[in-house]
Length: 313
Image 1: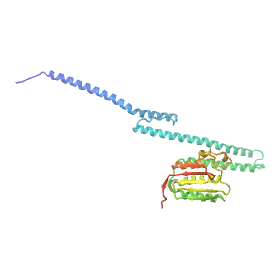
Image 2 (image 1 turned 60 degrees about the vertical axis):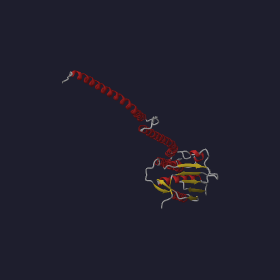
Image 3 (image 1 turned 90 degrees about the vertical axis):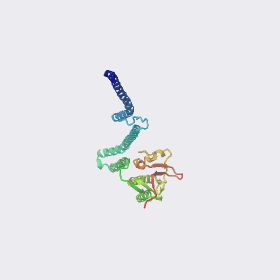
């Protein structure tokens, strides 16, 4: 017994099924494309915003432009890293501008005096003038002031980062060398040392410069025949105490600032950068500086560095 059905009875459902599959495929592809675009736009929007902000900073040099840091994914981490970088750059640029402005101001006075003295020498009888020796002496003194100021500005910039080999350094032995040199350089100066073995890590030349500046500042303020006390503690603190007039309470927060000079110090030689160099070096090494008025009088300036533990060998 045979049974037969028309081919059209099978072909028609297959054609409909084919059409349905095509429609489903096409619709699914379109839906996937739309969803993918929406998702990509949502995911890439922070990247686009970050790119636009970076392009704005590049075009305008506005390092203070805010960078949004929403979320906690990798893009947000990247945005936070950019924000930290631009903040650090903005602070660095601001510091450089202030340094240039302050240095220009400080350089103007000795340059003006030097120019005036040279002009006076060039007028009239010149070196045959009875005032010539006095003018030459003043010009030489102003030249020395300019040399000190320029050298200090260079050092201030140089010690902004540690770009020299570092090593473990005995802070107590470093302080002893500085104290011995000061005693040899200043006759009649009495220096009492109280040095506990202490090991730090850093640029030994820079740290010795910082310690030397603290001692030099104390020497400048010490009365004739006065005594200094240089102390190193096991916690990485090097302090220098003098018997001078002390630091006025109003000046204590500012004496480590660049070019800051109290009213009492303006008549004394100096560039106003010695203690600023101390702070620059110490903070570059991860430490801190401080100043106080001891109860017994005078001034106590200290720098504190991270310690490595007991001395080795």
